Image (cartoon, rainbow, N blue to C red; front, top):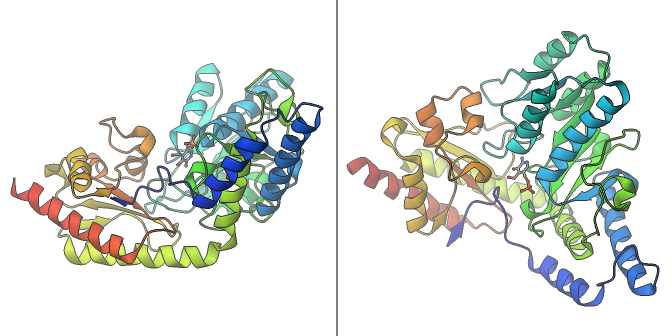
Length: 388
Ligand code: PLP
């Protein structure tokens, strides 16, 4: 099976699995226990927190471990809004874009039903959000509560990368707080809290060959949020619950591997993505590449077709699966739903082109042979669909 759905999730790296098995066997204590068995778990947890903080140029206390990207996004957005509401009795205005992941859009929609004023930025034709659009929206606000801007670093469906450092500058010029979902960019392109100047960032381990069920929220030390999980005082009172030490260590090992060879891996993946792009253009008639050449992640390519109106998007993915190639349409979190991708619709694509779009996502383990096989499979599937 050729696996080109790495933006949905990745196979766990052998080094990660190995380290986690040792931890699970030998460091089973509760990190809050006073005895030495507990303190070994605490030491492992602290060490991984320090290493992860260093990787993103943050302080260890600025890292909150969560169950993944969804929880990190929810904690940042709702936690920020609840805290400001508790202080002032008013909701902060929230600025976002319709190309965000549902883990960002859904909590914001929930806050809108509670009374928060929500603004959606205009999307450029390449899928990016512009600084001008953010600036004019911020200028139009008149509230006294510090607004929240939530714009993702890189998009999970198209791979398009937003000018996030510039957007953070614009947000800060008008005193707003900036959150960014860095779930897809971390481990593929440089992600640094200091360099990007962002106040809150969301991470997920299973997108970088780490374990499922663990992620992190970077929270700049000056910002206070209301926890979503009340209970114990873990994570400096910001997320109750016994810390899953072996998952945290697995996340740390996976992150370290991704960061160590970041540039070399990115170059390799970009070469494969370019090979995929030119292979599809040369061999698949009527193909239309959605992902732009510039300003995109090295590992994602999204493609649709001129005759999309006559193609069944689900059948396309099933056809690829029958030829042993795993790809997806739309984001994994919405697959199974017949709706066209909300991201592609927000970029202005017609519904039929959005529905027929195929996303290929490469990993550092992908080979040129696999790319060539995927191109051949796509050409065959489309030829069969067009004949019938
Ligand atoms: N944000 C983005 C951009 C994603 O791609 C995903 C996963 O598809 C998530 C958030 C959710 O992350 P998790 O699966 O760790 O909850």
